[in-house]
Length: 272
Image (tube, rainbow, N blue to C red; front, side, top):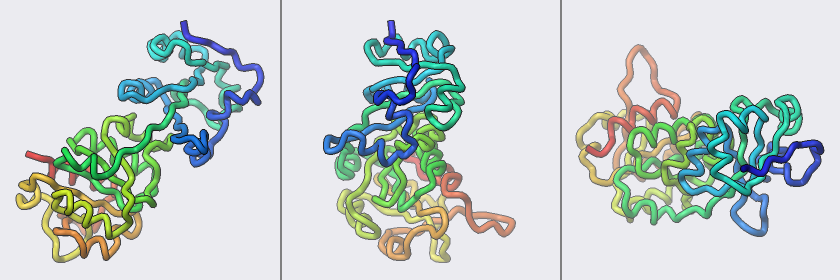
């Protein structure tokens, strides 16, 4: 049986992970011990996190979910406390309505080095300074669906384990290996090259290859580099890459949202 605890006091220190909406604070929750905490939302997302080895700390569930959609999860996590109350009280506690009725506070894991992820990869996505959490989540969902082996992020990019990114990805941030690079733009391009990768910068320039050019898909190790939503990739990054790549468009449209573009690019440049 799961360890069910009825919430009668919203100030309980054990509820702190669910009260804090500052995800930077959650990331530093155990300092000086590392790593910290993230929040997985919805039974489907929680299952994916558990399946990939993330460790639960505690659950916050609407009562009906305990014997409903989350029952199998809670039964499998015996000994992990499950805090529960009616929907209105949980909204008061968290500051937002639980649309899927279940949250799980989970321990982060130490991130691998970029070099270790590149060792056995054929297709990687590099996210340069992408901050929008919805876009991060959508890119990870595309990466999982379309065979990207790893995602590397620059230090200025948003955290894939922020709650919104996890939810938008439908939990696929847990299915694609990822890490932050220690090098900043454009220095990381040389690191990719040193690990055997041809680099393809997605950018709107005249000296570009079309995304369906066979020169790109034929590469055994290819890194697709995507830039921030507003300004795109830094000019220095583009100059450092082997190829500049664009998606051919019509009707005067010059660009797509970075998440939409990633789906097209990942499909076209998947390893044949």
